[in-house]
Length: 204
Image (tube, rainbow, N blue to C red; front, side):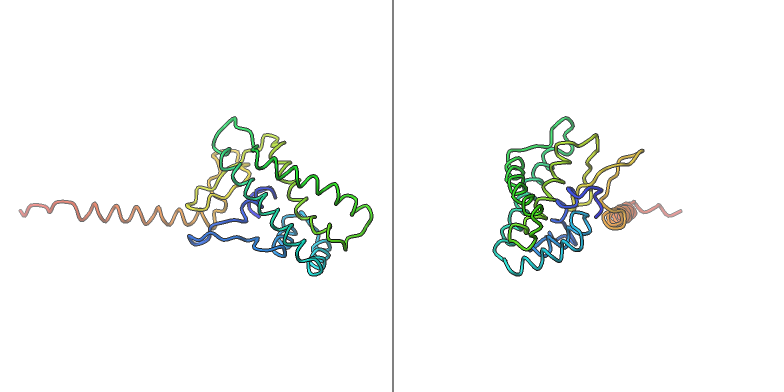
């Protein structure tokens, strides 16, 4: 959770590690468990959802599928907007996904009011909470700057709250240090090449 906003932490769950793209949300269980440290679900809600998922695996798979579709639309939107001042954080695909999620949220509100958390409809809770987080950041950015990690090929997103020079890395401990190591190696290589290319001095 390095982005400073759950909506960006969500899109960063499709991430690069050691030059390989890794999906940290491969199934419904991972989606639910990720939502707890993201502060979108409580530990109690997490356990109730996992119990419901065992009883209704098809519904759980559908909620996971919709979450991944939202993540794709949200990432594509950010890819097109970040780094382009003045462009609004919206797209037809993102709007379509959010409309569907808000329709689901209306049914979920009734489930929560009834207190019947054991129904299959309750499985959409993490999807709805994530959708609200995404909509809140996309529609009401409140002047927050969204940056993108310069680590290649990381490209993770984060809220840039730095007061002086812009933040460059999702984490200094990972992408920042790797970039420093690459830069140091490149300078050593350049210096070595320059040394070997120097003409030999004339003998006195």
